[in-house]
Picture (cartoon, rainbow, N blue to C red):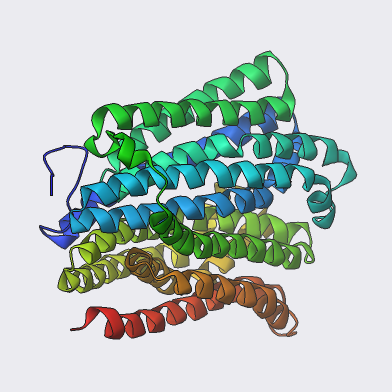
Length: 449
C-alpha cells in the first residue's frame, strides 16, 4: 500500500490511541468551528433582521437537518467502503469507490432537493409554523432545498478524504467556509438588507465554493483522486455496497431528526420557560456531543481500514482504548455540570427561573454522559465494520424512545416536566446498551477467530 502521500494516514500500523487522537483533533476543531459559525450566523440575523427572522430560520432547523441527513448517510457509507478498500491495499477499488460515491452523492441530493422543495408548505404546516414567520421560513427552506446538492458536494469530498486518513484538509476548508459564510452574511443581510433570503444564499454560496475548492485540492494533491478512465466507470457492485450501507445510515440520521421533532413538541407543551431551559441545555449538550462524535468518526475510519487489512485484534484494541478516553471525559464533565450548571446556563439567558430549571436539568442528564459516549464509540466501530443493520436498529430505538419515554415520564405527577430531561438520559441509556449488545454479538461473529 502506498502511504508516502502526506495527505494519507495509514491507521493499520502504529499505536491505536495516538492514531485515533491525531485523527480526531482536526475534526473536533472543525466541529467547534461549525458551532461558532452557527452562533455568529444567528447573531447576525437576530440583531440585524429581527427575532421573527431568527425564529423563521430556527423553525426550519430540524427540517433542513432531516434533508441533509437523507443525503449525508450515503457519503458516510461511501467513506466506510473506501476506508475498507484502503485497508486492503486495493488502490483500484479505492478509486472506484471514490468515483461511484460521487455519482450517488450527485443524483440523490438532486432528487431529494426537488421532492423537498414541493413539500415545503405541507411540512411547515405539520410543524404548526406561526403565520407571522411562515413567509420567511418558506423562503429560507426553499433556498436550502435548491442548495442541497452544493452542501452535499463538500460533505462528499470530506468523507472521502477522511476515509483515507486525512482529517486536516476537511478542517481547513470548513474554516474557509465558515469565514466566507460570515462575510457573505454581513454583506447580504447587513448591507443589502436581504433578510433570511440573504442568509440562505450566503450559506449555499459558501458551501458551493468550499466544495469545489476542496475537490480541486483533492484532485491536485491526493494520489487516490488521480483517476484514469477505468476508475471513472460506473461499478454496480461497489455502488450496491455503498447504497446498502448508506441507506440505513441515512434512515438512521433521518429517524433521529424526526424523534427530535417529537421531543420538541412535548417540551413546547410546558410553556416558554421550559422551552428556553431546554434550548439552553440542548446547546450545551451539542458541545458535549462533539468529543464523543469526533471520537466515533475517527474510530469508524480506524476500524474500516483495519477491517480491510484483516487486523481484527487492532479493532478490539482501538475499541477498548476509545472506551477509556470516553470514560475519562465523561467523568471529568460530571462534577462540572453538577456544581457549575447554573453559571453555564447564565451564559445563554438572564432569567433566574430558566437558570434554575436549566441547572437542575444538567444535573440530571450529566449522569448519563457515559452512556452517550458509549453510543458514539460503539457506533464508530460498527459503522467501520459495515454493519448496516445496527444503523437502522439504533435509529428505531431512538425514535421509539423519544416518542414514548417523554410522554410516559412527564405524565407522572411526581416527575412532571423533569421527565423531559430524564427521558433524554434514559434514551441514551437504552441506545447505549442496545449498541453495546450489538457489538458483543458482532464481535463474536466477525472478529473473534
